[in-house]
Amino acid sequence: MAIVVAVLVPPIQQTNHKPNRYPIANALSHLFKSNILTVFGFEFYHKNNTVWINGKYCYNNLFKDISSPINIIHDRFPSQIRKDHFLAIQDTISNIPLGNPYSTTLLCRDKLACQRLLENGGIIMPEVSDDPACFTQLLNIWKQGFIKPQFGALGQGVQAVTPGMHLPQRIQGLVPNQSEPSILQRGIYPPKDWAGMSVRQLMQKDIGGSWIPRTAVLRRSKQDAVVNVSRGAEAIPAIQALPSDTIDYILQQSQSICSILDAQPNGIYNVEFGLDFVIDGEYRPWLIEVNSRPRGRLEQLAQQFPDRYLQEHEAACIQPIRYLASLC
Image (cartoon, rainbow, N blue to C red; front, side, top):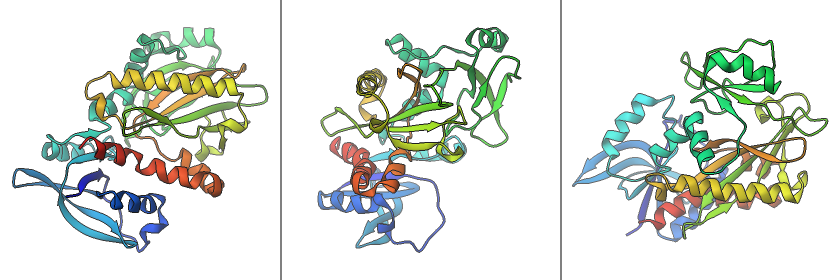
């Protein structure tokens, strides 16, 4: 029998697009030949003391409906925005392992708790405070910083701040109409002539349990300290613009970070992390954030340079599924 990996995704509108329009669909055909069936969906139920899914799988360039028992789940559900829906799903799938585990997701979501854990493990990060009474004093010392929602995601609500600016105690996060406690993180001065420069290092676990570093993506902007492609930042392979020592340090730190997170409960089910580093004026990288549901950065390179990065992007799409199947 095939190993069935369910990919937990939110409801999406039906389209007429063929699966081969999506890079992951092309890659899934290789898994199917390896007797790994990948089913996308969000409807789970119990049958014969087993958890089943109503979902879709790809076959012969078509999306097909399927009902199937499952072995393990890759969690890609937006549980912050759809919290009630996710909790209801959890009640049904409680005995099925998740990759990444929900405990890991909650840890990475809490920027302050995650930073304290990593600092205790020897990872150096820019100083951070969650005490609004200290924000003004700290910012006067640091000269620049970033106000962030403590549980934010996708860059929502992040603001670059300097002395004299308003420093809110609460800030809008990812969930609409819901504010979160603010944290203040020390700003890192970027290299000369740049307003901001950051690197996303995608790390994925191979079937032997080791961590694979994917091609690091550099985002940089001459106008905006919050370097985000959606705000106009440039995205290029990091190796094209950063010194080799910088790249080596990022890789070294990334392995250490993943090891620390693997030591947490259910760490065996960790499948991937998106590690964000900012680059200072001496081209030293500083970890600022860990993302448990990374997306989009390698895809940007695949779109710009398909001959060089499309194959890697497709491999990255299915690596979590391949690893989770190996645990079964």
